[in-house]
Length: 106
Image 1 (cartoon, rainbow, N blue to C red):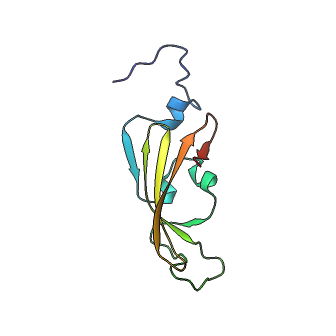
Image 2 (image 1 turned 45 degrees about the vertical axis):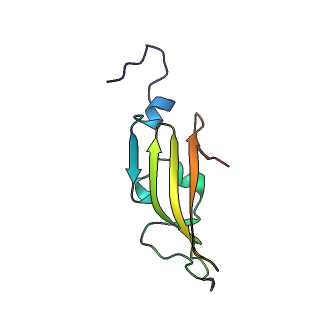
Image 3 (image 1 turned 180 degrees about the horizontal axis):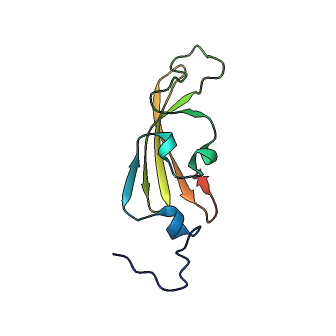
C-alpha cells in the first residue's frame, strides 16, 4: 500500500494519477494504451495483427510499422514494434509523462 502526503499532487491529472501504479503493466493492443500515447507516436503504426508494409513494395496508406506489445512502469512506456521495408526489423521506442502529455523519448 502506498500513502501520499496531503498536497502531493496525486489527484487526477497529476503524474501519480496519469502514470498509475509503479508496478509494471503490459498492453497487447494499441487501443489499450493509456490516453495520449497513440497521439504522441502519431498514426505511423498499425495495431497488432493489422497489415503493414512488410516488404519493399510500398502500398499507399499502409503503415511501415506494426505494434507488437508495450510495457508501462510508472511514468514510462516502452513500445515494441516490427517494421517492414527492404529489411524486416524490430525495434522499441520509449515515452515518458511530461506533466501534461506523453512525449516520445528521443
